[in-house]
Image (tube, rainbow over all chains, first blue to last red; front, side, top):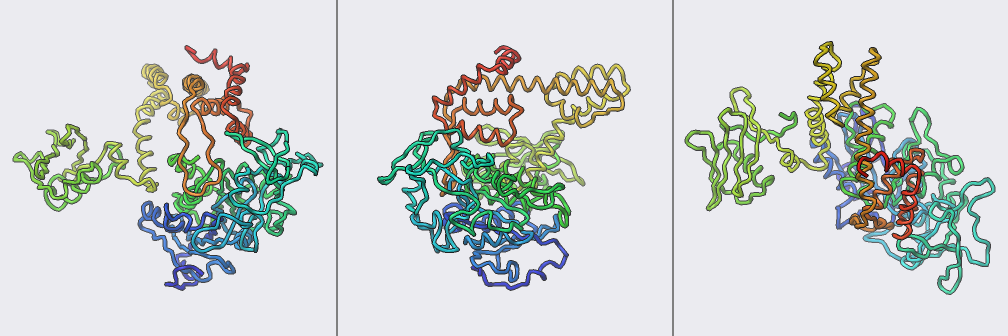
Length: 339
Length: 281
């Protein structure tokens, strides 16, 4: 576990001031590992450390091994601790990279899960475990080859995927041959099966690698897309789909491209998974992005979570600090002009 | 003076113990690399601090009233600093906003928030004074305060909103009517600008994203941005999800298809109302 073995402090003992401990799992998807960010940042946690040093020089953000912080995670990369003495909250953050650990994080009671990586054009969160940088080709870009890699599915049942993606990553895909009926836009209850980008459009026959599939041309400029079987329930990746997990985490953030468009309704609405935040808001918090997003989205979110300026945030609902972080992160991303 | 103005140096400690503070400020904030080895001296009248290195020379000048220090750079640019007398020492503070911003890091949220609060406080102070008069029993002054407040435009809105007093119906209604009128005036100005933008097809630069981003931002023109913003302003029955869905659909269209959508919007009833409202359009 971890790269830094210098300290071994049980997590229960590191908070003599009786601070509330909040645990955060940052799940780094395929192409969003620390090594993949190298030209921009040393590591995700180093980025946070550097920014916290500027905003709160009195409280150190320490990257170290904290034994007992999180049991049972197998792909931990780094662990960090930051005590915000004003909030009276101690944050412990780990970075993990496997699909199995992402699922475990979602099923862990009371924690904050942040996914940083691709949305796979509306299919979910996608993982791989590798040293160095990732391989561009293979099934780790779709269904995966083990519990460590491939998609954790979160999307609509039918998603348009541009042919460029199939050509780039050369994975086994489940498109619908024209010999079959085109997939229905809605199910028998009237719930949309189709991803929002193709609703109301007419499917057409598109040739790809000497076969014809149902697809659609759209975008600016217009590009050929095949309709792939995707989904969030009873998928090809079961148990790595949203329906198969007992969501026990307190916060789930998916900060891949346009994740609000791809997954918000699936996660939140009763027609789909129906993970609804109660009133008053005390749990089941979820946050997404509305535009193409890079690493700064997840990292600035975490920076804002750690930097919440109100005093005495301990033992309170997380709602106020999460909403503040949403507001502030959007402002910071606006400043960096990330669409 | 702004509450959050950063301290620079104490006049009688330069040259001396605070010379490095001044050197760092000049080197980093004013980008004067030569300052590192500069000689620092006071003028005979003790009201100037002169920094020289080879052919370079700049100076700080304390004004006669000892309230302002000016920095005179070689290119003729002059920067102003404020002086506060604290325990017989003249302390110099940075007060020019561009210089303060250069001192701050974009992740130093505490200082940035404090700067914003300080600017808000200063910019609204006099409007707040007017609102206080408006809510007082000074009948003659109240009338004049009301006239000035209406001329202040958007600057008056928040001070009025923050001090509404429902106890006196006449004053309460006057305040709210004024707030709404000022808001509508501002709205009209915005609509007028957006209407102009709607005819501007120049492309907006696509933002640069970090590595490995799967979805690239759709190309946008100024008229596309105007169209999307107008929808937000005019179609109040569209919630955030609908707005987002429409925006994505719109941006997935070709320029010709987008142009057709713009034309379609300008043929709606709501647009003819907007045209009528926007003065001079």
